[in-house]
Image (cartoon, rainbow, N blue to C red; front, side, top):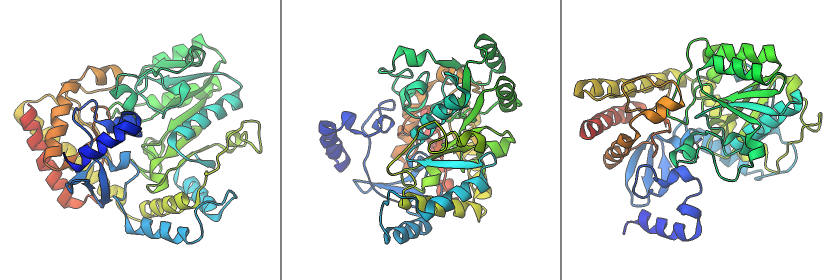
Length: 426
Ligand code: HOZ
């Protein structure tokens, strides 16, 4: 028995499914997960000393690769002064200044501890601000495991076949209107059907938990206009895309300004964090200024803030996005060229350092098309890559991430590997 197998056996006795987050369990690709004992740069090392080029990047946060020396130094420096204070601290102010400087729509921001907390708090704030109950989300968009948002959700919920989780009261679900992504008419109809009842529209502006879907031209601006016309709050969930597709996220790339934005992953530099921010007029509805309650013992934790500040400054003060865009384009092109050469129907959406593969002959524009793709072919592709030392997310519905630490060597090796794997699964 390998060290990973032995750890998994022990874990299964004590931890449900042996994992602390379901998508780690390899359920949809088969086999057992490996356990990671260390990670450095673009590489993770499993409990059996196997080295893998990592395209999961801790599901997004590791944009500078693992164990980046600048981030490690920032954490070590903060650690000298303590781990948690329960009072305001100077790091929180610097973090807020950086987020406001870099994310176009954010005038004020509050730190939380995860992306789930950020989206949960943002929809409460939208409801409190508008004094309305209904919310609109899109099928396949995943916003963490928030009750009202775990309906037609993506990510692990979809991977495991539970896009509508058990345990959500019917009365909660009734307040969530689920619409198809990329269909502006459906949104117009919802506003007509529920006049002055919709508090907010929340969406991943580039849905990245059902593969990776790009918005149709003009779609995001149309949502912006419809929210303005109908007095609803537009929330961009940029937990995955924030600081990933550009310094200012999708809103900067697309030139569309939401009212609120949720953030996470990269802003923690690898430590647990989340944030939500936006228009001061809305944010000032939060306690202690306003009537919308939201709190957290570890919010603004000094270690997480120090790590996140270092990560954001590295992005702001370098050519990281140019390099990431180039690496993303190279690997997507390698996949497309190989698929064309062997006559395999394959779609490879890619934006900056995010990409995915759909085994499909049609471009994928929404949840229905994503789930209609040949997801069964993903499992052998995943395992062929893993056998050759390339770790992709263990689900057809997750997005691959590249870090600045990948460099040319790792990308060249990965291009060869994914091409060889495609040939074998054809
Ligand atoms: N947002 C991540 C999935 N796309 C979270 C990973 C997890 O669920 O563990």
